[in-house]
Length: 191
Image (cartoon, rainbow, N blue to C red):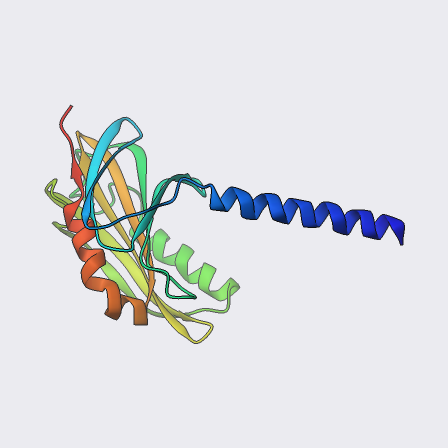
C-alpha cells in the first residue's frame, strides 16, 4: 500500500509540473496584429485575429496557431518547414504520390473508427501572399463530429513550407473566415 501511495504522490507531482509548464508555455494571446517569427531558415509574418494564440516549437510543430478557446475543440493551424526545394510546387506529385496519401488517410480512418466523407482534390491556387500554393485534404466523421483537415504547401525563398489545419465543421462555419485571413496573410520575408 505504501508503494502505491508513493507512486500516486510522484504522479501528482508530475501532473502539477506539467500544468505549471503549460501555464509558462510560450503560447501568447494575439490581437489583430502582425506576428513575425523565424521558422526554420526563413522569417514568416502573419496577421492574428483577436483571441487567437500561438506557440513556437510546440508538439513538434515549429509554429502552432489556435483559434479562440470554445471550451472543447479549437481551430488548429500548424506551420512546418519541409526542407524541400519549392521549385516544383505546381507539379501534382512534387511531395509524393497523391493516391498513396489517400490510402494512408483511409487506413488511419479505419484504425480510428472514422468515416471518410470526401477528399479535397489536389489544387494549385493562391493562398498565401507568396504566390502559388498547392492544397489537398479531406473531410471525415469521427465521434459524431465532422472534421476538415487541409494541407497548404507554399514557397518561401525557394524552400517548401506547409500549413496544416484541423477544424470541426461547426468551428469552420464559425471561424473559417478568420482562418482564411490568417492563411492569406502569411508572408515570407525576403532575405
